[in-house]
Image 1 (tube, rainbow, N blue to C red):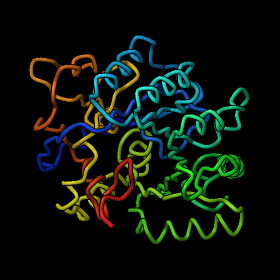
Image 2: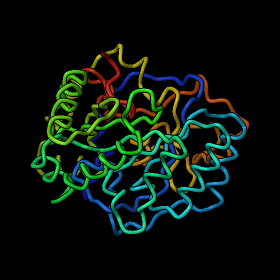
Image 3: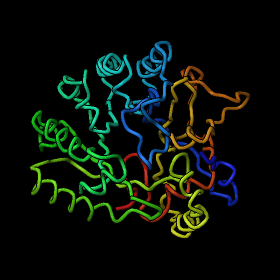
Length: 321
């Protein structure tokens, strides 16, 4: 695996400062039932890292203190964590908005038969990975059989009301490009996804999030191996749009790793670039219980061009309409 952090400090990315915190994004661990080419956390079936119960209690204390309105749960496949359902139930009892970043295929895994029903009962928003609407491209990126498993999972969610207007059960899909290119216009691609998935499978969803592949971790290593890293970085830099700086997710989100350490975003988490707090080289979530982050600088490197290129990119999709 090629490390890319040393390659991401060649250009001075503009300064970004934080606004009031809104979203607590928590990575429960790197274990996953898939190993996707574009995965920026290098997740897979053999990873063993997972958040301990003490850190989960800190997450809940943070929510109880009103420090963030939204709990955004990710992984790996976060559903594989033994306290996944407990965390959601307790966070919802605290009236937190909860998002589950789901790979869809996990809904069909042994032992997860009741997972979809649990998510619906707790009114959890689902952000589901589906990097294309065709079988060929999904299976190429994520493994043979993943497309059919994903469609089956989407139908299961639809049967529970997910994706139906007025149900309050939100189902959003995520698109990633297949290679070292910028994603197409989000609105246009969303319309195409909705048309194809409805016509061919009767599948419904609320919105499509279009994400730029970040030049880090597994995808960054692939770029280095194929000698495409420099060209891809130039593509991102040449498409930089200053107006996207106002909407980047790191201004009102913090990312927490499985050990409870805090970062400005999950990309910085994977690069080992911690959130900066004077006098603390490694900030823990517990350190932020009595602190405000508004006005603090964000740790930036050249990968930040990925979030600000073209229409922009974030965990909520494109930044510009």
